[in-house]
Image (tube, rainbow, N blue to C red; front, side):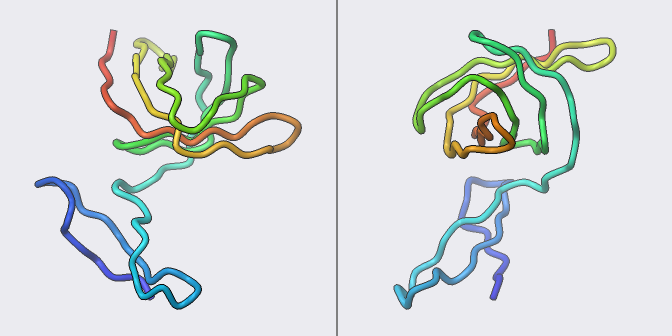
Length: 111
C-alpha cells in the first residue's frame, strides 16, 4: 500500500510504503517523478548513459565502480548545454555487464 506523505523539506513530496517483514515502519520510495531518458554522461573515471532522471536523482549505467556514500561529479550532455551535477551514490548493482548506479543529486548547474 502506497501513501502520499508530505514529511520532507517544504516543496518536496514523496511516496512511502509499508516495509515488508512486519516491521511496521515506512520506507521512503521517491522524492521526484522519474523519467526514462538515455543521455550520455561524463564521469571523472569514465563515461555512462542515463536510464532515468528526476529533479532529485539519476540512475545510470557505467563501467566505473562506485561505493555507496561516494560523492561524485557528473556531466550530462544535452544538445546545446551541459548539466554539471554533484551527487551522492545511494545504490550500486551489477547490470548488463556494467554497473547500475543510483545517485541523489546534491547540487546542479547548467554550464
